[in-house]
Length: 125
Image (cartoon, rainbow, N blue to C red):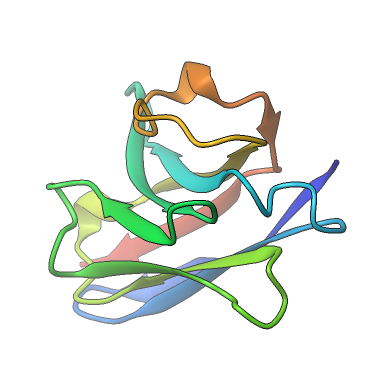
């Protein structure tokens, strides 16, 4: 089931941006949809996840307090990542990922079989 990521672009430091990840149909309505990012020359980093089955959100400590993640209850196939107080170090390609069932290892990118195309977020200082 393809995942489509929307949003991103060039943002000034201190600004905000919103990313959305939409899945076709309701394939992940019992699972998890997550966001990871990869900065140039760095490993993939977990950003946040929304568990449809647990109705819970998970956010990395590195962005906690600045980023929020939410599931669209009406559509049940879209997860949004709202990024506030952006910093230049948030510059990365952001990827959405999904799996059909919940996992406690939601932070581990190896748990996700389905990935969307990356979307670039560049934060200028």
